[in-house]
Length: 615
Image (tube, rainbow, N blue to C red; front, top):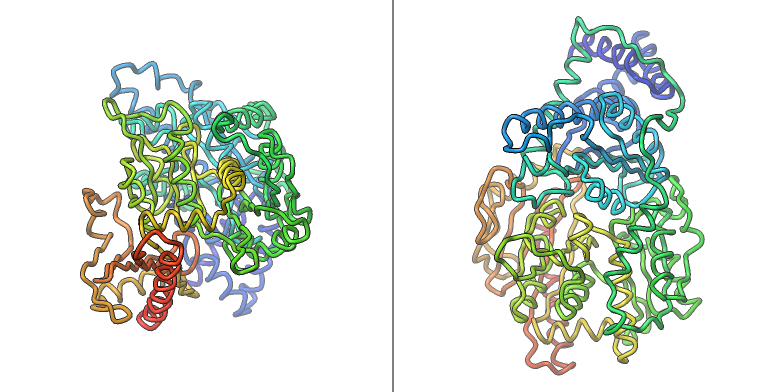
């Protein structure tokens, strides 16, 4: 972009921007740049070097002015593009379906909108609500910040064509994001098998929405575009003419979650639970649910219970991050608790820690360990709810996990005669697994109720994990012991990660491209016997389609170990997923311990080897 074009584009952006704060920031930079200040010009170049990419994760970025940040103008343009895409698709559906009454009336078109407690989340939600309301849609808007799974549930309850959740999940405090779900007749038209109803978007829909947003932006910045009619306002009020979703929806979610319990076979509630909301929106939903289930001894971490967009005790409010559970573990020691539970800020993920007697200290469980424990529990209990069978003639319940998760659950399912599916990364794919009764991904995402929530849900997962832990305690067992039982049955699987951070998102593809060009023939002295490039091939046994192409490389070694390399979908880093395996000589505890020690050593070797390969 030339000097003149850049300054002209910035001025047009300022004219369109409804937020006085970001307008003022850009206006000052523009004035300085016009006066010849190079630093101001360089800053504008960075802010206008592109546009946030709208993908299957929607949008997520730091708050700030310009097209590469999250702000009210970016959200307005995104909402208008989403509206135009949905409207055009529904109009096309009307002409093609046998019963057009289902999609004919514009008044029947519904959108459900939720938001977390981050900076400007409510404003972004209200901007979206106004745009859809003005287009004649029935808008259902949450009355206050709440968990992502409650929004996902309401997409199904309202049979809404579109769901929007404004959240940046567990990102740093200055970030925000915009998640999109499709449902109703819109989803059933796009995916006639019905498996995508209520789930997050997948390709090619994300690309089609992105293209429509690009058209909206092009119209806004066309040379003959009309002058903006919007008047800047420092606040976005709750829009009129929308239907407010309130306490009834929260109580309905709780009643349905309680139905997942089996109080006859699993009646025990003697469990002391420390819970942290990580300054997010899960606090009331999770603790109220646990109390209602009969868990009377729930101890909230007070410093982190109330929603706070500044996240004062957690610079990076991800329960997986080292040190994130420090306050919760301190509280657990003070109260001699049995279990620590943590939701991330939008409560769609769940972390847990348990006391490890052998180490005489608390131990945070990995996502794979929680997934194995919950998976076995649900295999033994059976589906937690009726209505899971969604494929005519197929009566086999299925558990699933993402490809970057451990292979342990698949082996456990095979040994128990239960169906198992492995999918690409993300619950958008797990939600579409036929007859799914439980799904998980290693990044502490779990869905124990796929019938009612077509996404990961850290609130209901906390309930079922507490049921499991109380049952183990009543039997004189521990989570660590249960993991050893699973290892004795299906082998020891030890997982870990290596993360390569980059300064620029454009560098992400360069790392995998280099690895694709020069793949390793051995890793830590173990010969690579098989490799898979998911950008050009499907998962084993799966048909490859362009929609499922993803930048990921899988390497399997002669020793049965596995390494997966893929760029993060939401953060500037490349992730390397490591899995080492070992077969215990017997089911005896000492044999399992010896196999685990061997696998841990191998995992360390794999990590060191990949560090050298990717450096």
